Picture 1: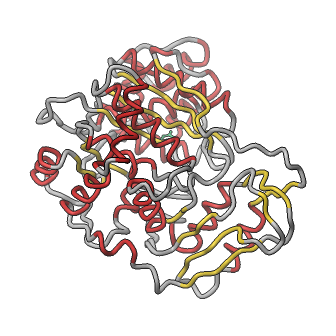
Picture 2 (picture 1 turned 120 degrees about the vertical axis):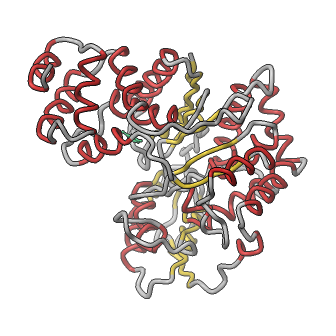
Length: 431
Ligand code: URA
């Protein structure tokens, strides 16, 4: 077997398991060079992969490194994955909800890069919260509290790490089979028996069109079928920031507003309730989705989800009193210079502007300011007058002019009254 023959074969025919393994293992252990792997990835980009090939690629990538051993948990391990968005604090919200309903959460989460944030960065906005725990502490917290979230410490899916870095610089990121196998391999290596996928669609998402998002969803559900994992994919709108808060402490505060019932209506509540309900169903804690939704809503209204959040944060050293501590940060207001109705956002720009304020990383080594963030004061369909607030900015930077300009230009304001803020849930796809 050699790489050139395999690349040539892929131009016209499907590959075998062994041929895909030869390429992936060879690239991971440095026996296949970047230029041959680049050609291979570009061939896949144009020719696609069959479902068998995509599932094999997923399995081979899972086997390339460590897998989390969660055998100390007797229950079904239900995980959740979001393809990433702006203001996406759904993981923070649903974790204590599902844990309060008896679904164990044992998760390794990532940090943010680019215009989207990461769960670990958000949790670290709570003073004292430790995202590095020993295996024993992690296990004890899952057993005693029902939930633990830590940063990526194991060598999970090294093949994906290397291949993703190459895809990033060879124009091969936006290939559905490559994205699907990349995401699914990490979830499976993380120990998931069942997975709820929140696939974002719109101007702040990786997938800009519903058609592409649906294709990705179907591919991941099918990989789940092949690899014996139950998968439910929810397509949700990312055509505006989710909820009203973007930035690390801002998002923790909005999470608390949802869990305490202070915030009663919001797109972030709709998405969180749906994701949590699907997890409750997959975790066999309800007979049907309506009952699951009721359990989820009850866990918020009876305070159990918020109690679990406190327990989880405290168990990992977090000081809940610190979450209101952003009084010292500078606040600036971006106002509208016309009247009308909010028609839409360039949501990726909103995320980028928030990163520039210090809330995100533009490069891997940037240090995050947990206090930096924005509050979105008007959402799609809202009527605004000239001079009304569009965004409130929090930053420790002396100069926020770039962010202010980006935010001003990110909002489209229309004269039409007919703009409807559509439900954030577009479609649910399961096997
Ligand atoms: N996220 C991933 O983890 N992998 C991809 O390929 C794309 C997005």
